[in-house]
Amino acid sequence: MMQIKKENTFIDLFSGIGGFRIGMELANCKHVFSNDYDKYANQTYTQWFGEDGHDSRSIWDISLDEIPSHDILCGGFPCQPFSNAGKKLGFSDPSQGNLFERIEQIVTAKRPKVVFLENVRTLVTHDGGHTMNTINSKLTDLGYCGSMAIINAKFWVPQNRYRIFLVYFLENQEAANYMEQDLISIRESYGKEVKKLSSILEETPDKSFELPEGTWKALQRHKERHKGKTGFGYSLIEDFSKCANTLSARYAKDGAEILIKQKYWRRPRRLTLNEARALMGFDNDLAIKYGHLNGFPTNICSKAQHYKQFGNAVVPRIVADIAHKINKYI
Image 1 (tube, one colour):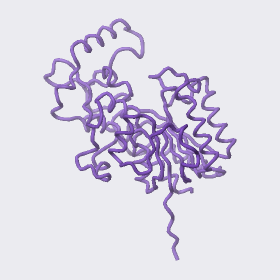
Image 2 (image 1 turned 180 degrees about the horizontal axis):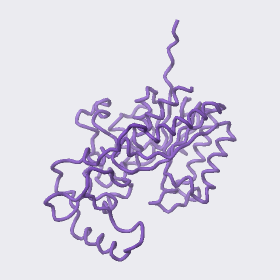
Image 3 (image 1 turned 90 degrees about the vertical axis):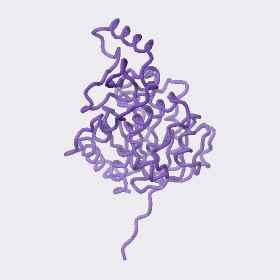
């Protein structure tokens, strides 16, 4: 008699707007708990997925007993302490850097079969490699065997977005070794074509997304003052057959990293909210699975908050591809 494999359960820490959740559920895993402390991200999350199993308190205020047992712990733990766009304070960040310590405590108490984490790629080089070594040694000390890869999202969505994905198996070095090879295959995406920005652009965007004159002039002045230096200025896109730059959490400020040259408009424009949503892979096919027939709603909070949420999100279908591989080994 054939044995039916049970659904693997997962928790979604620092859940943001649910990129991890969608990806895990695409891989037939069962959500049992999620948590985020950001007021506006929680508003979007609960509108998109409902309130079942979601806790909006600080992760420090939730007792370990309140967190259900699970097979896979997922966490896109806050990347600002390590990112190029942040101050790179790492573990010394008083507000966010110590959140990995809470992950460690949950892992110690619950002993999930897998710890599946995501972060910015600069996590690897932060503090001369000490930060990554600390994470690795702490999980290794708890009996976990690790695999990791830096993956560019350009084969899933039309942006160059490098993120590190860490997959640790409890006392299973063989699974970690196989997973290392799987991650390389996913990263290389053999045979896949890079996505084109044209695939997500609206034909008739609203004029409200055009940059105000003052903002556009300020960007031009800033670029001129820092001529020859990297990391200053803006990216004005005219060729839509290529990828965009990384969408960051600061996009609402001036849109500098992805400005669209719109035909017949005097000034460039930001991505619309629907375009930003699509750029992160929250497509309409996925929205329908959660009962949103017209796409995931983007009118829940302010434009600035929605841009921030998309800039902080993880691409769901990358998570799904990795989760499908994880399922093979547990």
